[in-house]
Length: 124
Image 1 (cartoon, rainbow, N blue to C red):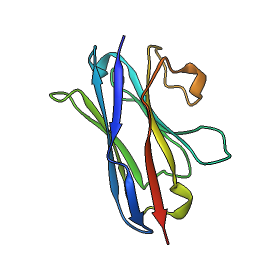
Image 2 (tube, rainbow, N blue to C red):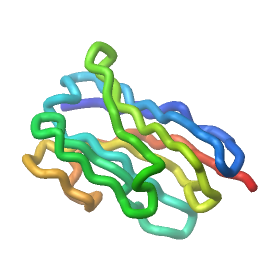
Image 3 (cartoon, rainbow, N blue to C red):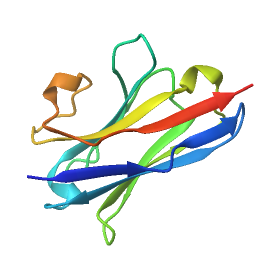
Image 4 (cartoon, rainbow, N blue to C red):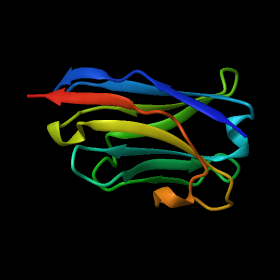
């Protein structure tokens, strides 16, 4: 069992940066594949990024590749999503998720645990 709590969302201008945090409790994040998803109003939840810390396999959605980076701090048992060059279409509620599987998945139903989400709004 793991509990996930996101933070760091907010309002930022187009071209700005924001770092989201996902603090985990219960088990170390290195035990899981950790992912970030987002959901905009009226849209389905979509994959953003994920990493298998055991194999270092990392995946990003094409829409964020080169702009977003997933990382972790072992000491804080926290996963981060660094978001640069933000666009208005990045506006969404961002969720972190943990997957007990062995391979990185890009579909939400593969993930076993979810945080409550944090709002990111990019204004032009």
